[in-house]
Image (cartoon, rainbow, N blue to C red):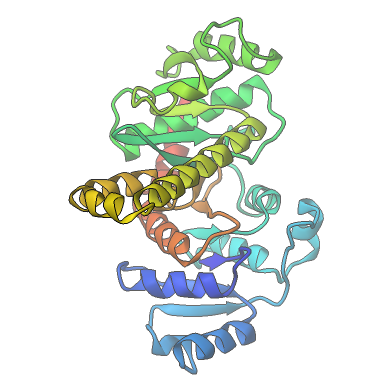
Length: 335
């Protein structure tokens, strides 16, 4: 199930059409049916989305939750919004995974109120995978909770530990606390208290806690997950994305500066393409929403067709992996 985003519905439609050729699942586009059909006619010259694929469907939703809407009010009052319709479908077993590029606050509120938290979870968290040296890096939380308590960061570490062990088959995921220095006395009160709590409970919950990690060391390849509050995590995430774009743009301009530099780079093109792919956050799809009872994926608000394409493929793997069921079993067991 797919909805929302700054570029909806065109980016959603194009991403779904691109993805449907490579996945086994059915994709349900949630939104104003009339507008979606009009866009399908405009782009593909088809009267009905099923003419493109029988596994593409539309679920009508007449309301939209805007970015400026107050999340709790929007979820309660806009019953026919694509997000509320999607969450209710997910809750009722009419879909296996829900993907949204809409309002992050409304997504958190809707997932918590309509789908429900895993037993024992204080707050769910957004956990995107980022490129790191020869591997991926989980960032948790990346924006769901701007104000956190130490217990939240401990639970985020538990989410990361369970997920990376069971889904990525990493025996002892190295989990660090994102901070301004490696010493345990560094940081604000939240980070100092969180450090003590993580260190004191690491053995109890079988977490390989490696201590504080500075931003510059996060991508060394030695760390599998960094834990932080949603405010810091969101800034960190967007800074990484912005720097990746800068590197890609600067490299492209440098290679095209003159005919000699263009010709000289030809033998290196395969390596440059591999490097560019590694730095492209779109390759990693959306962000997993961990801590709720059903699979939910948060796509970037500015997602284009390619990011929706990658996110849909990621969402299918997320559902097939039974990651949420594993998290429920493991989390409830340790509680």
